[in-house]
Length: 631
Image (cartoon, rainbow, N blue to C red; front, side, top):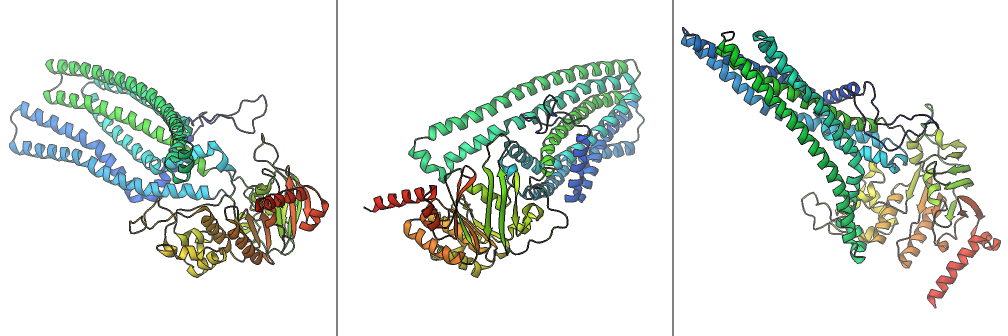
């Protein structure tokens, strides 16, 4: 069987003009075998004893109905033949009852073992998946819709696909064993009967494989629609969006779009269901005709004395057994095929290449910053079809100094910070840490030297303590350090006064450990900003402090207080401060004005005012606005 990987809408990026690019839905030789062996290895690592048990139960499940049919034949032949001994009948009856009991009990035991195997395997697969996702050090993949779609399908597949592939494969083995046993018994009576029964089951295999391909392709195609449905549903249900949606009366429009995405998904599912109905109806009709022909032939042979009454019962059991077994094999093979297609997305995520170049093998820890950080002719854009965000930036950040980045929206300030954190690598040029190119440093070693508060900071549905401690997981239990960081950010009094202090959930989405959600609280935007600042402060002793709009959500008194605290904290530290409020950056050692992805002005506040350039114009513009506001 050959896996057809679900379709993507674009060809590979390195396709040459005039060439035929390999699309991701093209058959890949050996993909099915590799996927099956990968699933088997994972199941063996996660639940070896359960795998052996499922294999044994599959073999027993295949032999039990054949044994029952042969015992029934023996009972009937003994009864019809006369001259039987009661002891023989008793033994045959006991054997028949035992085979029936085993046939009835095996599915129950098999279901239990498979369920536990699925749980263990799913947990292991999900862990492996997110180990791989967490290993993607940059951000580029998380801005790629195709990768996000594949990740969603892969995550869903991780829960069931590896266990289903292996267990359904073993179920296929069970069906083959049963079919082989019945066919052998039927062939011993009349080879034409065996051929008829076997041939009739073959169309089911091809039909089910075709349906499985359609199911997998549909799941890929519907991924964006389902993500949009969840997105629109979130807008209707989440508190962050509730204010605007209700104020603007946009709920009906959002609901209309949500239902539109659902309708497109439903229409695709409906088309597939109709095809499934037509296919299975045809297969059922074919099976009915074959069974009728087989029964007529068997009765004719019995009437002619060619076979016995017991043989007729065996033929009838074989007709039902072989068709049921081979139809089950077709369904199982189709299910394996379908799960392998979904499993392919999982494996593709695990095989996703890094979006950041690996540091040389001999690269070691990054030394403490002593001289400074240099950006040398740095160019960057997020994609080849997008404009340059940074266009030849040259900048030196001396150790122990504060550099303020200012400029209009889209000037490249936040992008420059992302490059310093090495979420991306420069498209051209280099960033050097005491002369060492950041690309030659393990990314973990670089980030261990940084601390930051981002403008788009996270509000975690954690406790207050965990919201701060997550900045340095090794210190999650360091309550004195967490409270000290909160105090430095001016958040301690508020957090300590919560219903459970620092153990209060900063969310009403989840219940506390004792099941009580009533003590969960929602903070204001300014309070959340202080918590985000506390996260940055917890990572004390780092060489570079990045503050991206650290006071944008604060009132004037709080903003003044925070900047006073930051001035004290920044003293003697290498720091980068981004702000649109120019009064908040005037005490920086140097102010760098970015515009159009370039450094346009660079110098201390007073020098830039004396230059009477763009910085001076913006500063006086804001100053006049504040002056007018106080009149």
